[in-house]
Length: 201
Image (cartoon, rainbow, N blue to C red; front, side):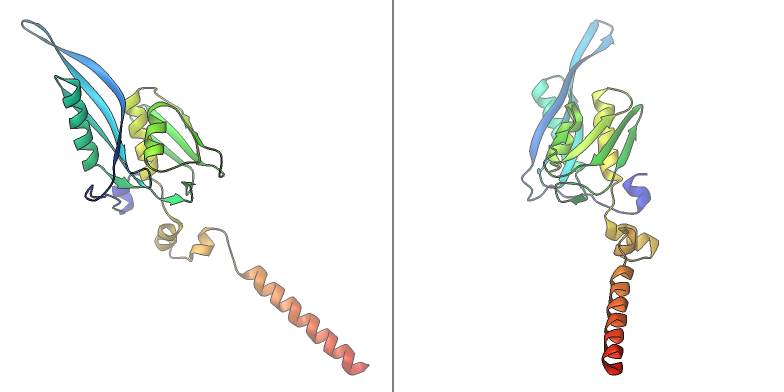
């Protein structure tokens, strides 16, 4: 389920952000024309502020620097904000793009980024420092990166889930106030018993 289906727009403007760029893959491609082959280059680029904003772009040109520049420009148009809980994500998420499938799971502080290749680039530039990931499908870098983006876009905050369900945030998180109430009732019952004992004495 994409962020459009959720009705939540996390898109971010690149204005005023200190964005870092990372090239995941550069590939040489060929187009066969009448006179032979015409070579060009493609660049898969990830852009992020290493806090909570990240985007992915894909550029193609006759020269490598121009392909990277086009990829960066496209990535800046696709920036979105990632919901986080401390240094990890809010809940497990499975992202699917084409034949690429990437599973992301929250991790305890100190775990680090357990990921490789393009997945690591996306997670690090999104400012996530503790996370577990597993590739379950294609190893194609483009599919992997876009599946990771899909998994991050599927993340939701407890407040958003609570609003969708029409319940409190505590109920979404499995926290209830009943134990406290029961403790208060037991304390009141104990005080009543002690006062009764004093009266009879």
